Image (cartoon, rainbow, N blue to C red; front, side):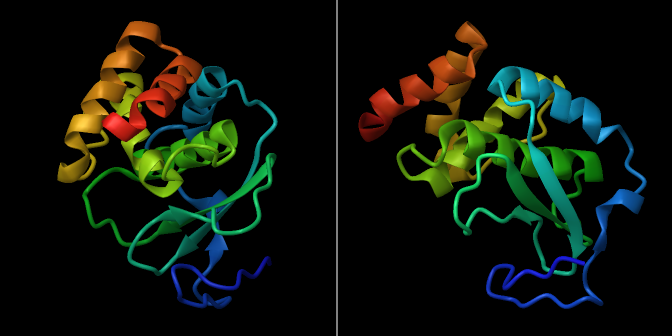
Length: 165
């Protein structure tokens, strides 16, 4: 079993981590990944998944950037009431966004949350409400996404306008 140094400052141990392969999801997460592969243009990504007892699900994007590999941590605590597939889909979106932008975007940590507004279009319903302080920027990102349906054009727009947004 792979061991990781910390998860949000907490050191996981083997009793807290189990393989994500045995989780019974309410929809096929592979379908979500296939959509992300199309919009991000990334097809050969490898993701390790773990179930953790930390309060939140997250990705390991604190490590050195690796263009083909990522780690997803799915929390057993469902603090926001979303289905497991939506939560994993949200974290997968972060992973694909990280690989697509190579973290070369203004304020990467916040930007990865802004862009999850696109999930609302992909899922056909509101699955990513975002933080209240991000509303205005997310609305602009969603507007460009709706016009272009292009991640590249949406990211390029954001990079050009971010200081004034």
